[in-house]
Image 1 (spheres, rainbow, N blue to C red):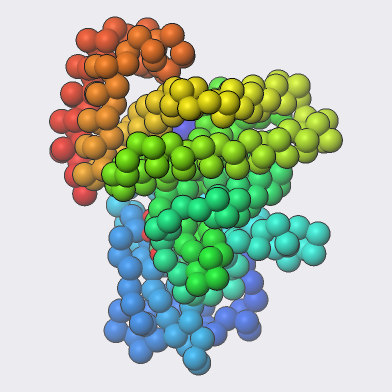
Image 2: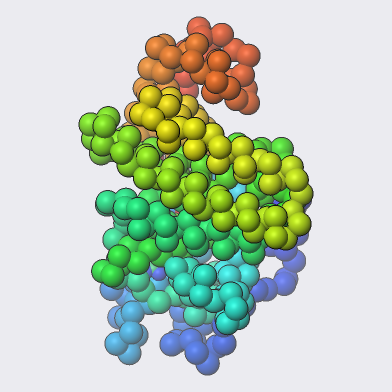
Length: 360
Ligand SMILES: Nc1ncnc2c1ncn2[C@@H]1O[C@H](COP(=O)(O)OP(=O)(O)OP(=O)(O)O)[C@@H](O)[C@H]1O
Ligand SMILES: [Mg+2]
């Protein structure tokens, strides 16, 4: 158990509560909200896909709301999953305070506000966003996302779960973030991410690529040239974003180690943006990295889908055809590092069996 999980366990076992917002601004009494079921006349729709919570789309006095209600028993195997509802209330508490301050509000305009939340009652109430999950990932959406994440990170909050289900786009093409079950705090000036300095592999653009982008590409089955064109746009946006991040880090006397880390990421991307071949090489490396990471996430959470199996096929394909390239370019990491080609192929064949077993 890490320190955060330990603290969340202690909080959960105590009788302390976190309440966000004022009860009088709540359209219904909090206890009434907490008792809402599918049969309530306020309910327009229920979304039951969540592992720790259920989503109720409500209409009360002509206004629409999103009520996130904690499940009695979470359907997730790991600790982070078990504490994700508490974590979300904690992060919404941080974010709502920032959204209420004029100097920080603007940069968090894409974060869905919290009208009311009460940890012990197991409820979070937000306005309903009339939107869709991202179907076309445009340069503009990437910009909105990266700018929002950049602001969050400056305020010491890092979002890990940028999956399709956690991003909405409204009719005005505005992006919305609303699920903070896996957003953790960190010190952006001395740490790479909320794991401290042990895992430089993880950063916000990597999170977007791993949880969203490469999976989205896999579902789309576009020609490679189109995939690379989109990847180029992504890297261009990402360079601009990390240049801003480095400026901020320098202006705030961040540790040289952190500044150098981001600068080296920028220069790797800039090198790839020079020509198509270099871009293809980086694409292969990052695609492999993202699929490897996401496969383990799915298997660890015992929540695999057909996409997990597709990812495993791609990883096996790259291991079979581009193993030397991975080896030479630091493409193997964590427990894959130092393993032979045959060992890795065997390993991913075993993961395929696990992923078949854990299909949701
Ligand atoms: N404020 C909102 N407005 C409109 N739709 C929303 C809003 N919040 C959530 N949704 C919809 O509900 C879905 C699930 O919400 P959310 O991601 O918060 O919970 P979850 O991921 O299902 O829960 P868990 O954290 O237990 O996995 C979203 O994918 C989105 O479609
Ligand atoms: Mg979600």
